[in-house]
Image 1 (cartoon, one colour):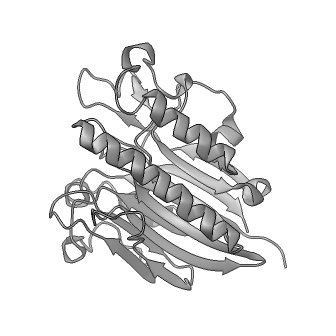
Image 2: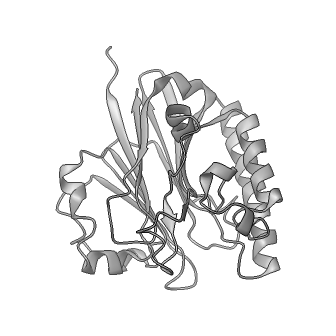
Image 3: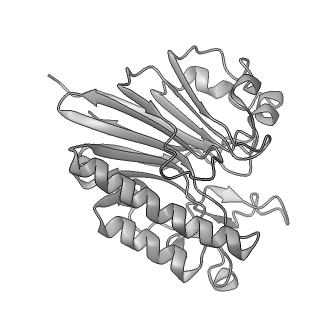
Length: 263
């Protein structure tokens, strides 16, 4: 059976109702996206507008925070899933940070995650939780790999991995999002058998960012950070067709990122 190219898109929208008012997701109608993962919806399931785009997906999985107006993830797909779970084993504070779906295509049994990883900047307790969340997530993925699953992860990881992943590494060396402990975890994650798909395609190309501060005209000057990622487990590395950033798409302080994969 000949492989098909699937397109997966991830975007932190920083409020899905605000994005709807800007009509900033209408481009989805013409984009042929098989899975769309959205982070930071800031909405309960019933609050997600049905007007964000015209395309109708067969499945919508929503994870909402116990605190209304915070966090939240949503995953749209037409792929037939065999499991849907909001992954409480990782998101123990019930902050609506994960969508988990499983599906089988060809000989690949895939666990797909749409994740809004915690931000550690507000206070030390949140940085501690962020690091614990990271560790629980890796442990959970490793358990699934032992069961024979291939892994695909998309989302806002809230950390820039290396110095080429942000415009001003020296100025942010002591800022959460670029702390040694956060970057070390990303090293550990890759060493455990996962591939940063953008770097797999683009190598060490610079000035590839997915988030910009709203201050100081940062986006216009491309003073940004790459904190949004698509990862795949090593067994899917040869299936990667392309990975790129849609930095022309406006509507949030993040922009969408894309993985095209042959399955």
